[in-house]
Length: 285
Picture 1 (tube, rainbow, N blue to C red):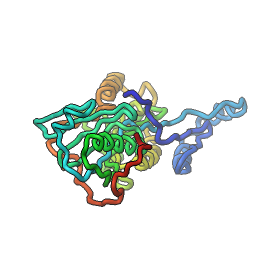
Picture 2 (picture 1 turned 135 degrees about the horizontal axis):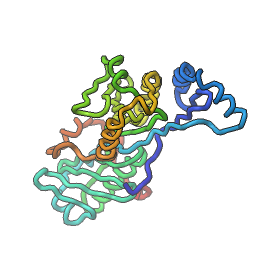
Picture 3 (picture 1 turned 90 degrees about the horizontal axis):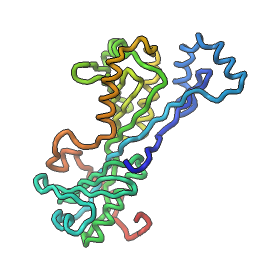
Picture 4 (picture 1 turned 90 degrees about the vertical axis):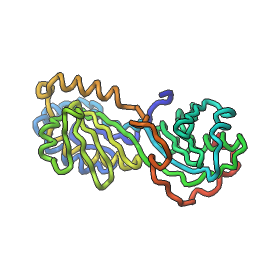
């Protein structure tokens, strides 16, 4: 991806076990229960004036948004006149790409469009408006409406490894672990709505409806996995290698598992017209 990824949140874990960030009190309380054995080293570090401890960066890898142009779109004409367009006639759609922000739009003739690849909600909306502007310049009567973020993929790496087998057993009501099918634990949260993939290496992948839910999910799961922190010798090296290969293969991939035949397979569209018409302002170009 051409653009650098943006951190959605930064949780700073201090040497004294404190956590700076949204809802940091809950994480701080969990850390303090597990840091008594390191008090001597921590006090020495504080006396020497050392900086705060390791940080946990929540990285947004992909934001998926949808919107409507409220007009019929001639896909063949878009493929002939547009730039960076791939026409997939067999699926009844075409893909259009732009570089800033580096994103891809999937366009249907009905006027429904999904935008993928952005690293923030703001960048996703800017990209969506630029796609709409290009279509408008081709002569289509585009009205930018019903924009909304439908899915966000975020990742973070905790500063310790995790005993995922023990974790999945204790939290079996929310966690599912099938090592033959997937190397990580699948943990689902109802409020805020999010699905997490937790790996022994401490890597966590979060899928949620918005960026705020990604951060809330990490803050929710942190004190739970902290109880199952593991040393290097506690984790099978072959398991770590398998997880690393899986993460490298899956992370950042935004293609669907199978070809999408129509827009409804992405998301049931909301008919709210709160965004209004697409005006002639050129500031988004």
